[in-house]
Amino acid sequence: MSQWVCRGIKTRIKTTHYPAQAETAPGVSPGLPLGGAYAAAVASLVNLCPTKAISPGLVKDSLIVDYRRCIHCFRCVRGATTPMRWDQGWQWAADGQKCDSVAPGSEGNRLGRVFAHSVHIIVVDAGDCGACLNEVKQLNNPYYNMHRLGFFLTPTPRHADILLVVGPVTEHMRLPLLKTYEAMPTPKRVIAVGACALSGGVFGPSFVSGAGVAQTLPVDVQVPGHPPPPLAILHGLLVAVGRQTPASITSPAPILPEATTR
Ligand code: SF4
Picture 1: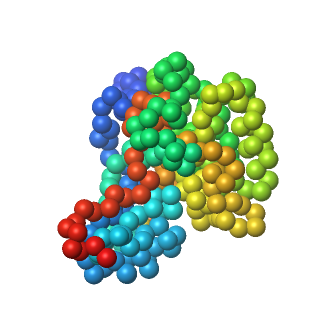
Picture 2: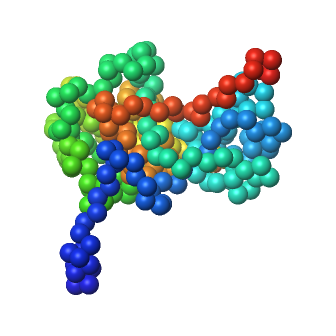
Picture 3: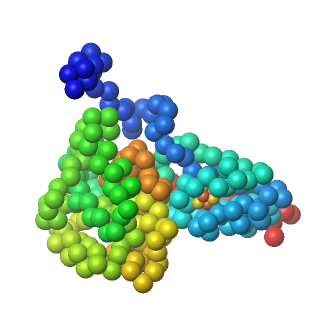
């Protein structure tokens, strides 16, 4: 123990500089597969995916990845003759279904400027396996230190601005989740974190769990990943308060000449 204290004093606590600077430390993200053109490998890659996250694109010989379903199993890379290209980033948070009617770039679904430096978050475990919850916990450690950005955890819904949900929403957690949301003051926002919270993941939908948070609550921000790394969750929080721009929840479709479309 004493050696760790001495080491900490000697090296000082290092905190990531994200979002002011890009994080370049190795291992901060498991990455996500990239869609695009894959020539003759399209059918085999679609069949390799156990969660049906990969589907043929509208453009001939192209693939689209639905990040709500991807569980980072790497089958499309390690088990494939033509491996999928891989994105090592982490800025994956996208607008939620609630925002479909809101114009892109609109501030309509963001918490306003008054929340810029003091946002309180309540976390609800709605049937999580523990993985996403563990990544959320990392936001409080000295390396990610979300307090420096004005984000704080609160155990009471009455003090919360953001409801952060992990897990597919099991039958037993549906009512507690609704009660938590209803007890929060307005304006309030909902962030769904992880593949299970976005699509049911490997659990649902089934007789005990649903197909994600959107079946129960209006979701403002979706953070894909299985589990998402802490930086992706931090990006989701920054998107919710309008300090970062959202990403797309599916891989972008390749732009090819019109003649090659189906
Ligand atoms: S890594 Fe994601 S896209 Fe690739 S096979 Fe696994 S679940 Fe499907």
